[in-house]
Amino acid sequence: MAYEFKCKDIGMDCGFDVKADSVDELIPVIQAHAKNAHNINEITPELFGKVKAAIKQD
Ligand SMILES: [Zn+2]
Image 1 (cartoon, helix red, strand yellow):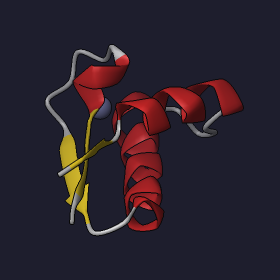
Image 2: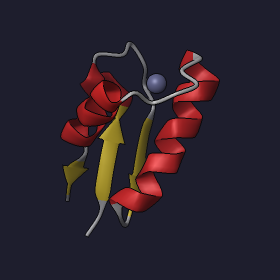
Image 3: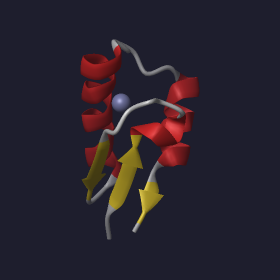
Image 4: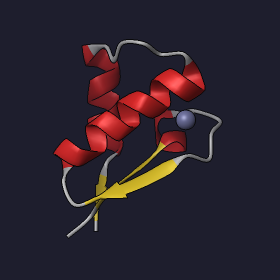
């Protein structure tokens, strides 16, 4: 089973996507991407909710 996150699914004009075996592995990758690509240094609870809602399970 795999989990996938696509940045465009939270409304970003961005082609980033990431797959991992668990949500726990996905979150740090998304955090690093948010920081490096979008200058988002802190994932707010609101943003975190959006991110979690956008994560799809294969
Ligand atoms: Zn992005």
